[in-house]
Image 1: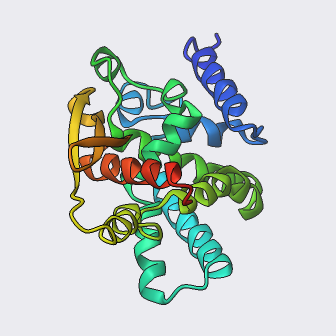
Image 2: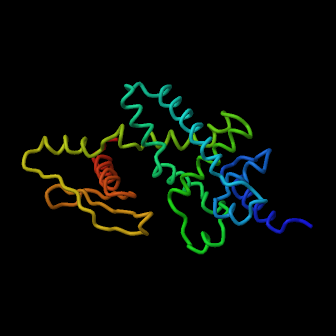
Image 3: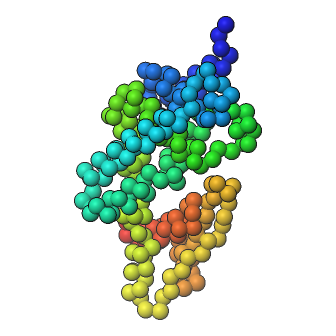
Length: 233
């Protein structure tokens, strides 16, 4: 008799392959990468928890990130270390997971499903687990295809390399009497996934608006938007 849970797993694996544009030769690896511990605890015969693949994927991600930064950025070791930390942190991996829709692919137990939300850490861990699975399935080159486009984009957006607030402050300071300030005007979303909207002002006039998952990121986004209005990129 065919295990009734297999179609559910196969469906999730197929969905993952579409979302990341990669077809697994070993479907079991993909299934394991998508298996949250809550699902594993209820159905231990179907697949393994993704925690071991997450462990592997963390190291693969570190190698890919370090190689890219070393090869493409002529920055000192200290800056590279800060940038790497920013790229592989939970918030960064969560953003990538959301962009790929990984939350829809994960296998959860009944209790976890009933909560109606997916924790940020769970999605971040899934990014690494999937990377680990791809690495075992096809090697480092395919792993790079999965994660590198996002890393390249994230480097370009990173506040570590681009401190938009400092740049804007230096410009405004050239005009005596003008005061630069930031105001958080909106806060929305659940506690684990807040979104903030910030206005950057010169004196009392709103110059630009930005948003982000933290007040700091919202301020940086607002400063960047202001610089773009000034023709500075």
